[in-house]
Length: 141
Image (cartoon, helix red, strand yellow):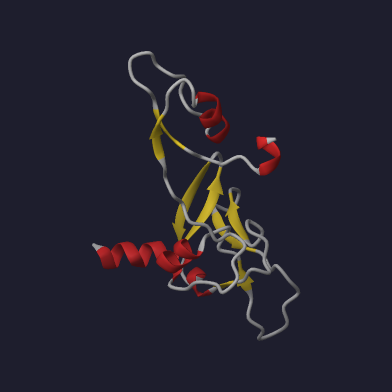
């Protein structure tokens, strides 16, 4: 199972089809390498009329020159797990950390600045929620 999953995950192309994203397996598509010089979302897509995965040249490549695509705005962790490599400089690199806390009415305003999507406080039990984004210094003033 692991081998099959890794094979599909590392060789599939994620494309938008209507309102949703789908993973497609396309022979030889996995031979394209990633380049940060290619804008995410600009190198390939799904052509509804032809019902095909289409790759678009992101630069004027010469005969015999290697063409690149973008694997999207992926962190090094995603690139390593999905493609077997990491970039020395990756502008999309990030680490997700989930912090969960109970809050009382005194901390509610501060915590709402950190997680405006949090549910309203309950009288019975303080809510649990995830911090989605910390405020920057300007927001704290």
